[in-house]
Image 1 (cartoon, one colour):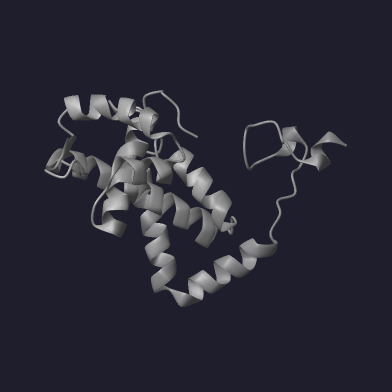
Image 2 (cartoon, one colour):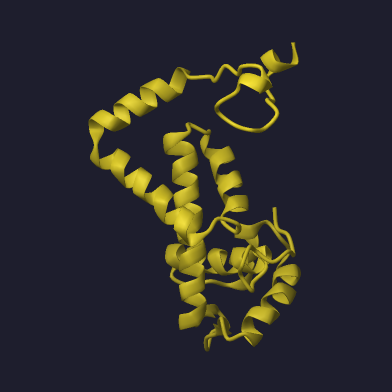
Length: 172
């Protein structure tokens, strides 16, 4: 899941964003973040994490306290909270609106959090909040979406998209 590529329009790699989010989440849960706890949360070796954290320390996003626990600087915490926010919005949208199973929603949100823009994140959050505030709309959308499966017309007649249809009916 971790890649070394830079996230869209951001100066940090996806891996670095994962590290910051993991530190933030471990500290939020335990009240502290040891290297071993964060490595375990990420499913990587502590030595891999140690090497991966060096650029974050050099950029002033991360420090160690007197007990050698990992501490996000103010700038690091801001970045970690932004990544966590994008992740949470994507995960909730995938599971709550699209009905994606929890584990798959978490895995996919973990991938998407690095490439979604702040504007798209906020609009998805608007949809989530609207559906939580409007019981009638939520019920109608979720009921209709639960059984809905698109039926594609031949490509020349498709008014939905300009892409080649990927459904089995189109192959027949």
